[in-house]
Image (cartoon, rainbow, N blue to C red; front, side, top):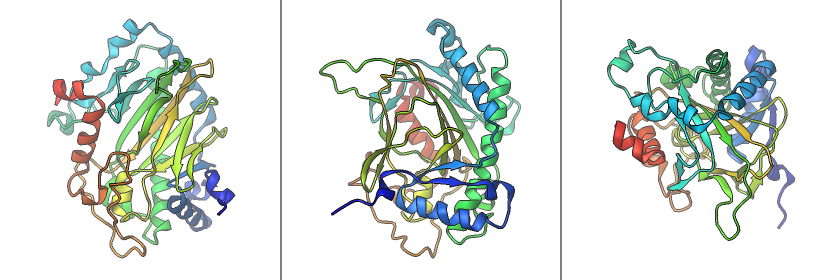
Length: 337
């Protein structure tokens, strides 16, 4: 039995008609639907996010991560409180109970302390801890706004791909989406001999609806498709998109959240990765979309990396998110929540 070449690489989709709202967006939606069924991952080009903005954020991120660790710890996550914002050092984040070989800065929608959700002590909502690198705050906020706008357009495409109104997700879940943004730095280091530590991030799925990832030229992302593990190398000017557990839940498994991992960086240069998670509102109650052909909501927990059945979840998205994130930062969970 041979494997189709189409399954050995991720599709590249020009989403300009979605971004501009032209008639060709139905054809783009069809491509997105095919990608979600086959891989759960796809590249997007024609997205309209300014390349100069992306380069500026890369340059400023390198400036930040090159600071001494004691300086970066001035913005550590413990100071972000219930907002879960700030810096974490190498090994400070766990995947499947094992430390990742990366450091990072956790960010999200900027909310002042006076905002009602912050006043109500809603977890993962609040002000960011912006490092004192000139221009960094402005670049982060501009980038998040641009990629969030892209997320709205892509979710319209996903709705159309399911033969739903373009506004389906916005009306139910994402009029005010939960936006979580990460700046990750993977320092280069040889894999120690005789140790099973070849992964910068271990196998996992994402939690929400849609992840929009910028990866720099070094790469390292690998995706577990039905054909096996395949690489997702950088394509200049593109984003890598993948669907999360809640879209899996909503579509009854028709669109599956695909496991992925990141190889240990041995390139000799630091690697940057910027995932933005476009998720349901914290208070949104996630429901299955009725009437989708082929959506059997099969319990696939025996095959999943975490042995969880996403189709059994019934409740607020915020509860699902907190359960997952608290396993990533158990010490912070104990201190903050």
